[in-house]
Structures are given as structure tokens and as C-alpha cells.
Image (cartoon, rainbow, N blue to C red):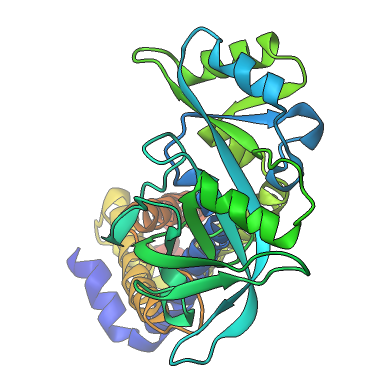
Length: 381
């Protein structure tokens, strides 16, 4: 340890620059991971953070909530499937609404979910206020609270010709319930029906987008979903997780970010491994002399690996600091610092850096102490 730290103190600039480079790369990994998670949450947070165990889509919708409607006969059939404790309608639609602060209401798009009060489909991440208890009340996404969707604010659905004006009062805020990167409201199904009729006054019936199912105690949601799909013609039942993962666009976003993250995970250890391999060549003469005066190869290897650990951990501390500052920077970026992903990333980068440093370790182990007496230097051939 003394040997490793002494060398690092004497070459502060060299090791400092490497630690800084590693820190910036680890920061980019953490930032990309958080950005991916935040983006996906804004696309399908409403599905992920609602209480239904199973969602029953129309099979022709191909897991697209916007394109799904469940017919009355299908609704009744779903409720009769073994393992279903409760099946209630869950509606979803995008509406033009008037919302704003300080009396400056503006037209904007908002997604409205309608569920049966006290039934499955309610938002599960309430952070302020309460859930709706009557028609005309709604829970809004907390990230849009400053845009006219705060507690006490009113949101008005802009009707088409002949439609009646529908107003929702926000009584609660929930985290990560956005859908399609839009402000989102959860209200009772009667309120959703009223909003639908406001934009389509000639509608004879308002059908739910999906059926929200609570499975019986002890039942497996995947098995119940499979049973519903098999028993009710024209439907596709998915667990909450399957509905999230199967949403259009989510898999594409994940694949795109995965490619970028893979490149970063390759670059960090390669940079570290190449640096220490070059340094090993540069100090070949000194290492040969140390071996000649009796320093065991194991000591030199441990010193090298300790330097790798110090560089990666120092860079990681810098990265976490930058990441924390970025998460507090605002600017509409939906990122947060979570200990789990941070620890996983730092650990994985450290392991990969140690593995790529094995090339430098191999060079150290091949040093011949006799070379110090011949003037030939270290033998690396």
C-alpha cells in the first residue's frame, strides 16, 4: 500500500487526470441510466403506478392502451374467470384542457384516466392530498403541479360543439403517473365518461380502454392473465409488468439506451486498463530494480491493483457528486439519485477495470530480476 500511494502522490497530475476521466465517464453512465428511467416513467408511469394486478386489453390493440376498447360482453366474461376477485373499467384518453396558474389558463394536452373508485386502477404513489372521492375530483401528476395541476387547481376539458364543459378539481398529487409524457389526471370513471361526451356529444356509449383486474388472494397474476386470455375471446390480458414492458415504444427506448450504456461500460475499463499497461511499460526499469532487490512479484501486483481501485473509486466519488448536482439542476430533467443503481454501476465499473488491468499485471509477473544485472531492462517479449 505504501508503494502504491507514494507513487500516486509523486504523480498527482497523471493519476488525477485519469481519475477525472473515469469520473466523467461514470457520470455519463449514471446520467444515461437515470435519463432512461425517467423517460420511460413519463411514457408509462401511469400503468406502472396503478393498483390493478392485471389489465385486459382488446387483442386487436396489440398492447396499445390508446387503441384498446373492451366490449360489454367481454367485460362481463372477464369477471367470471376463476382467480378474478374484481374487474372494473379503466378508461384512458388524451384531451385538450384549460389549466394554468395565477389566472393564466392555457390550452394544453392532458391524459385522463377513469377508474371505479375503491376499485383496481387507482394511483399508488400518492405524495400529497387524497384520492378522488366523488365525480369531478382528480389526482394529478406531481411533476406538473406548477403548471396548473396543483392541489386546489381546476382543470377544464375543452368541449367540442354541443358538448358540455367538464371541470376537475385536483385533490391529490402522485409521483410518476405521467402517460405519453403529458400531464395526467386520475378520476372516477363517471368523470372520464363526462370528458369523453364533452368532446364527442354524439357518443351513445363510452367503453373502457381496458379492464382493471384485482386477482383473488393467493392467485398468481400471470396465471390469471393467461386464463382470461384463453377464456375471453378477443382479449389479451397482461400483468402490470407485462403491460409496462409491452407498451409501444418502451422496448425501443430501452434498446437505444442499452447500446449507449454498453459502449460506456466498455470504454471505462479499456481506458483504465490501457493507462496502467502504458505506465507499466514506462516504469519497467524501476520495477526490474525492485524485483532485483527482493521485492516479491505479489507486492508489485497488489500495488498495481490498489492503484486501480483508488483511481476508480476517486472517479466514482466525483461522478456521484456531479450526478447529484445534475439531479438538482432542474431544467425539466426527470432524474434522481438512487443508491441501488449507483452502487451497481460503481461496482461493475470497478470489476471491469480490474479485469482489463490483468494485462498490466501479466507484464509485472513476467519481469526477470536478472535483467537488472545485464542492463537489458525488463523482458516483456
